[in-house]
Length: 294
Image (tube, rainbow, N blue to C red; front, side, top):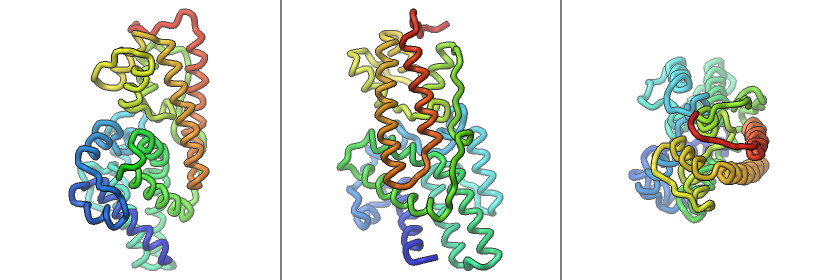
């Protein structure tokens, strides 16, 4: 492992620690030039807006846990690591990746054991980290202030995974992740699709929905995203669809720019979000348009 690769591994471990233990990471943030991330900021972003667990962004349900958490947990067990309570949490995945890369360096790149560790690290990175992290980070950068510690943290993490992606070249196919099918749907199915990243190809946060309501002058009640979205649709369905389409356009610009700047493959997310945009655009022109409960 080169000196650059080793320092990048150390950076990933530090950023992982900041993600999981912000209160204990003050010195790390200062060393990396990251403005202090308060517990309030950490809670608002990582608990209320963008929970950093792979299963939410890779599963067909958009829910925490389930098949993808079990699948990732199985990976931990397969490589002989102690299974944590939250195996698909971003900070833990990054820390595990850093550990594997360090073990690879110690074992030697040309040894059988070293090659086996490198293969495990590549699987972890390509299947369980890079498959969703660019989409996650572009969303995080959108909802936090540019002068905040979280924005700086995301920028550093993007640079770090950009370097690692060159070590583990892998092109996501369009039928990998995410996936979506657009047919005539009941309103409940449509709402679930829109708040499921894998289905919609876009990550809508609670703050996005509040902004949509504010732009349209609509009352926005507190609750789960599907509930909030239903309430908004009940007041102005075409207006809400228009706001979502505008949001997807902004998402596409940001994701394409991020992909180009950092050399990260986000094609499946881009293609799926374009399909969602086309579908919603067509739905806007439906007469009559009803989003009430069937």
